[in-house]
Length: 238
Image (cartoon, rainbow, N blue to C red):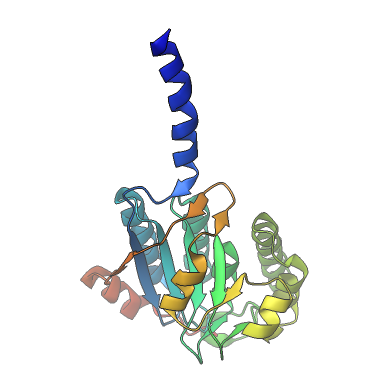
C-alpha cells in the first residue's frame, strides 16, 4: 500500500517540474544577427537552435538588426523557430536597429518578440534582386503567398495579423512603442540584461514557465562556413 501511495504522490511532482523551463537549464544562448538574411544566416540560426536543444538551454535569444534578405532563407529560419523545443526570443536591438522585410517574419515567429528603445519594424513588401520591383502577376503571387504565411504565423503567436498584412502590402513600419501598443510585439527592453529580467517567470504557450534566475549568457559565434556563406550569398534586398 505504501508503494502505491508513493507512486501517486510522485506523479504530480514531476508534472509540476515539466511546466518549469529551468531544471539544469541555467544557460541562455544568444545569437547576434546584424546583416541581410542569407543562407549563412539561416544556417547559423538553425544550428544555434539545435545546439540549444541538445544542451537543454533555458531559451535562445536572437538579437536582430536586419534590412531584410532572401525569402527562402527567411522561411528556413521561421520553420526552425516554430519547430524549436527551446523557447526562442527575437530581440530587435540595439537602439537604431530594425527588423525590416524578412526581419518582420522572423520576429513574428518568436515565442517572445521584443524590441529595444529607438528601433523599428515593418516595410516587408517583397522586392526582387537588387531591390527592384517584381512585375505583374508574379508580384501578386509572391505577395499573396507571403501574406498568407505571415498571417498564419502571427495568428499562431497571438499577434496582430492585420498589421503584418499591411506591412507586406503597404510597407507600413512602426516604432517599438507603437509595436507594443498594437500587439505586434510582447515587450520593450533596454538591453539583453533587462530582457532576461522581464522574461524571468514568463509563461509561454506549450513551453512552460521561463526560470532565468542567475542564468549564464552564452554568445554563439559564427563558424567559418557561416561567414563564407554570408559573404558569397549576401542579397541586395531591402
